[in-house]
Amino acid sequence: MIDLRFERLIRAAPERVFDAFTSPAGQRELYGTDEPGWIVDSRCDLRVGGVWAVSFGPSRDELYHHRHVFRVVDRPRRVAMTTTETRLDGSILVTTMEFTFEPEGEATRMTLTHAGFPTEELRDEHARGLPNAFARLERICMSKSVLYMSMSLDGFISGPDDGPENGLGTGGERLHDWLGPDDGGFNPPGASGEILDEAMATGAVVVGRKTFDYAGHWGGDHHGVPIFVPTRGTPPAPQSEWVHYVTDGVESAMRQAKAAAGEKDVMVHGADLAQSLLGAGVLDELEIHLVPILLGRGRRLFGSEQAELELVRAVEGPGVTHLRYRVKR
Image (cartoon, rainbow, N blue to C red; front, top):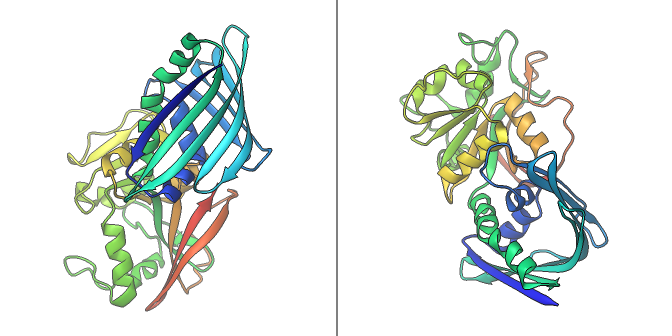
């Protein structure tokens, strides 16, 4: 039997690389390409004895099927699995795979050992796609997607009757009182100012089309970073060189935003968009600015979505509590 070994130095901490690798978004990146129409279906039960099932290929009629059974899950150091591949010709290939994540300064050396190939030809076939797969994984390790939204205690992000001339709806402007007056730029005091500084340090924005329109397109500029707007149909002309309308889905918009953001996080804004990103498995964290009011009516942030969240930070500010959650995969 013949082994394959591949490694890449990824500029992120082992915990971040491990979590990206084991997330639905990361798994899709490993098996994906940037080719239009490429399909990746991934379902993962991340535990010893759990199954990670992946189907991928250029069309529904041409799919490879991989079934990985986890033998070791040791966050953030190591993952080992037994892999059964069903190839296009119907043949079956059983191998073993081990991924390790070793800290190296501020980076991680991620190594794959893929063992049990019967021929050098099969080994080399698998090796050809690895540089692209690891590069795509590194791309999503470089930044997190973070939803930033002000919300009332009863779950509304705007009052009723919101629209292009009334972006926060009737009474909804109270949700932004914590920001203070906009005298050429918000400058809230204390901890709220630090939270706003974090948001303004993001390297790209993904915003829902409705939110973008209701906000007057921010004048084509949101703190001087690229803005990606998923949209259906024929998009309008961009309002500035910062604005990029994306017509091939929210996952593509997030992929482009993370590539543009580099090592910085991506700001997410908009209720419908947040729901879509959460459903697609490409929303990493939520920063909810919880305002102690009950609006009673308006636009809710979430609908029927289901997700497990981990509270990673709670910060009190004047008239607001900033709650940071990580989406558990």
